[in-house]
Image 1 (cartoon, rainbow over the protein chains, first blue to last red):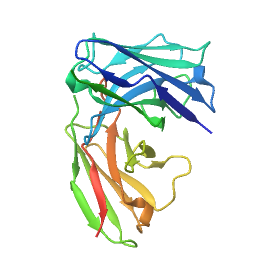
Image 2: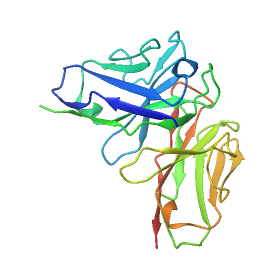
Image 3: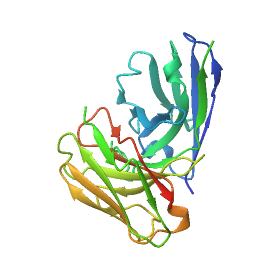
Image 4: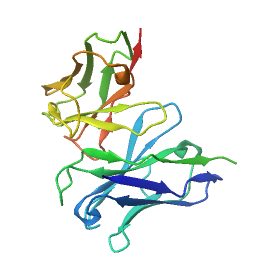
Length: 123
Length: 108
């Protein structure tokens, strides 16, 4: 079955950087667009970014544009989120998620989610 | 940016009862609306997409309806495992993809 496993979270000081990774299994990774979605403690869901199945198209929320970069390595079956200039308000659980259910399109439905990795930005 | 407003914020019901959750969009999203369920400490799960299509493996007691700006998620007869937070999400006008603030369904 579809599984998504995030890693790379932790405690980081404001202004510093962090890179999250996501390891998918149970489906053909290079057939699907992928998202990052975050959830601040006790709050709702906030979409962060999406990358097309081949990495050619990327879109971001205004709150992270210019600071975060989504990327993927289809040969290594890995999704990334590079987070720079981190702020306290970036503190959240970050979910790696699949865009589906249609292959090779930006569908903008999040059909599978990982368990998330917690990023805490604090001095 | 399209704003989704969910109501009520909290819904208190008993197992076996019918639950009706609402999601209103600040402008038309056609039928491009999805519903997710999130239990404490877990990731969200897709329930409904395109307003009324059940996702894979979702029980028939979950149904969605609506179009334009007003949408409803109905759970016909609540099971104990249905008590959770529910979010709606639109994909009509993006970026950004936006979510509602959530409705907490709690046991009465």
